[in-house]
Structures are given as C-alpha cells and as structure tokens.
Length: 129
Length: 131
Figure (tube, rainbow over the protein chains, first blue to last red):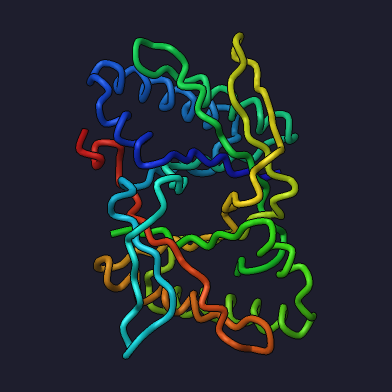
C-alpha cells in the first residue's frame, strides 16, 4: 500500500526554521536522511522531495488574453507543503509509525519538532495515467 | 527546473465532486489522461498522482516516547491535497502555462472548473533552500 506523508507549515513556521542554527539544521537533516536510508534498506522507500520556500508560491487560475492568471497572495494561516515522503508499506499503522518518526525529528536544542505529518493514501483511479 | 502543480480542496469541494454525474467524471478523467500524455509528449512530465478521499486522512505527531499519535479530525476549512503533477520545465512561466491548462479542466456540464492550482518550485537538494 502506498502512502504519502505530507509535511506542511505556515510562512511564520518557515521563517522560524530559517532562524535555526546551522548545527540544529544539520542535526535535523541527519535524522531525516537516516530515516530515508532505513526506508531504502527496508524496501519501503518510493520517493521524497522538498519544496522551495513558500514566498515563491503562486496560484494559477485560468487564463486571460492567453496569459495564466497568477496570484501570490495567501492568507497568513495558509498551510504550505514543505516536503513529502512516499512509502510503500504493509499497513496504515506502519505508514503512521514512519510519520511519527519524522515528527520526532529534532529541532532547536535537539528537542523533537513534533510537526504534524499528514498521512494520505493514493487514489486507485482518476488522473493517474 | 522542476515544479509541482497542486490541486487542493476542502471537504465541501470533495463532497461536491462525489456528486458529479458519471458523464462529467469521465470527461474530467479523459482530460486528465490526455493532459498527462501531452506533458509526456512535450518531454516535461515527471510524475502525477491523485490522492484518496480526505475521510481517510490522518495527522501523525510523535508522542513523548516517539510513538505515533494519530488524529483524523480536521477543521472544515482545511485544504486537502487532491493531486499533483511534477513537471521539468525551462522556468516558472512555462509551469504557470501548464497550471492554467490544468485549471481549465472540464467540470460540471463540461465547463472549465477554473480551480486554483498552486505552483511551487521543487528543490534539487536541501542546500537549495540557501540556509
């Protein structure tokens, strides 16, 4: 069963991440890299991807005079996708277990970030070609 | 440069989609298939996925001893990811043009949905964040 684990955050949340010390960021990334490596070893890894900072985000809606209509203004509360992991696991419990480990990745002062990780299954129909 | 084009919807949007006629659904899915094929033919396609209904969504946080604590209750306004495309294009403008085509996908009665498509640059590696 394939699940996508979504890590999201608001702009203020991302700004506070940018204020982390290099050491805190390195510790955090080392744990995330270790989780990816373990998932590869267990054969559960499918993909992972980080997204660029939300200040670059644009929403496109329709076209006017042949040009896409873009808008980069979002409510303060908007949750931006920061990154995701796709895993192929035996059960939903296992997907949640992996999400829990990502949530426990260390933040400033090596305390767990406790970030909420949204766990979603893929549709087995629809726009997949 | 890689960009991700994301479709989102709140629970009410999903509920409406669940009520579409078979004809409307088929027209929409046919568009999505042709759209992916066009992207492949143009050499810009990387990936596309549709996500399952948000009723199945869970949020996980780590508990005090690292155990997963799950919660399936979300605010009504919560925007759930419905699906995405990843494209490898020359720049943002090309990504916006592709997003505009996705936005115009046919909905009820074949009229363009004009749904908002969020366009985000995908990182090559974490160092691209410039921290």
